[in-house]
Amino acid sequence: MAPQLEPLVIESGAGKLVLHLMDAFHAEVLALRAGVEAAARRGMMRVQFETDSLTLVQGLKSSNGYRLAATGGLCLDILQPCVISFNVFSFHYCPRNCNRVAHALAALGCNNSQTTDVRWDGSPPDVEDLVAGDLAEPVV
Image (cartoon, rainbow, N blue to C red; front, side, top):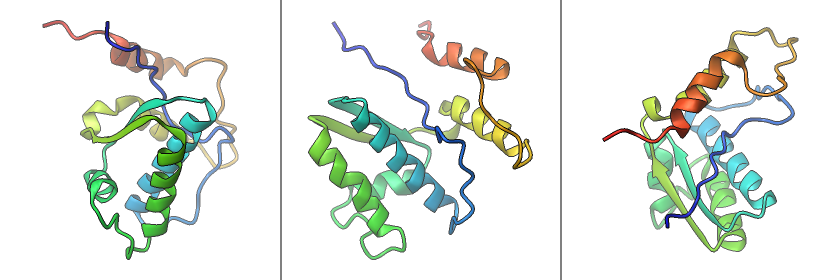
């Protein structure tokens, strides 16, 4: 029997708007770091992290881990808790079309003003169908 996977969409629980990003790669690094921290807090032991940043996955899997890059320290901030907290962990590249839920949530957040409280009881209606689609088994 295959192990059950618990889907987890990474988002800022406090609804924080991050205004100090250097570039899109920096945003991807911070998002993955937040996901690692969330999985560790939940006590997960076997985790797979997915991102649509191929550069980030390559950096985390490489021997130097982009240590000399501006975000190199943040990459180490991702790897260190993984080694300490998880029995098994892996990083995978997933094309953007495989990450529709996260992009729909990001679009909802971007289309609201900074003063709008972006919290819902349950899933936002436009996102429920995407979540259901992600959970559905593919028909072969």
